[in-house]
Image 1: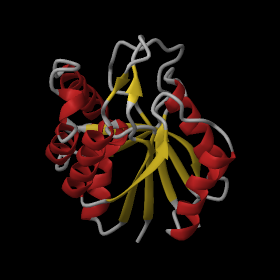
Image 2: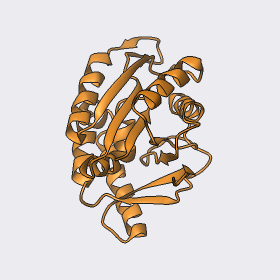
Image 3: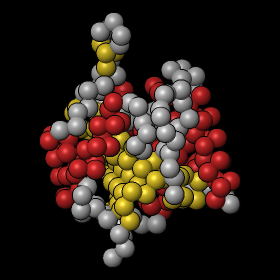
Image 4: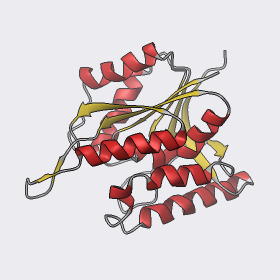
Length: 213
């Protein structure tokens, strides 16, 4: 049995990125934990507080229930997730306590500050983890300099419906705010990676470490 940790800066990052793969891990008997670094209220451009904490935490717990995963939500602030000792130690404590041997987290071409700092914190904390995979960002109008350098594919044809259900649990993000376009992008990406993998739906990752023991 593998002990999996999927790390995202915010609730929904993990679900959009690799929920199909996590559902497959659960089906295969692996232990899966989702870690969200932040689920706090946020500030808009006018420095007004946008209440979100309770809603996002409720959605995160529901998504984890659908996937059959444990969920941990840290207390770092949305838009201000740091890359420092606190974030590294928070991740490292979970790795040690749960004997994690596979980690999924953000890709390294992202431009969101919370995503970038989460990735850096994972790299620092996971120096002894055998397998580290970076999930893709759903097609979305965010500026980036590079494309995902994928080299690892997972057939999620039998699990895409679970990925979609878990993602839709984040109603505050997918209904209204982005006019459901993020769901269309998620399906299109899964179909594209599926066509590359000779299956209906797939998720693709950049493998940055693979140690076979």
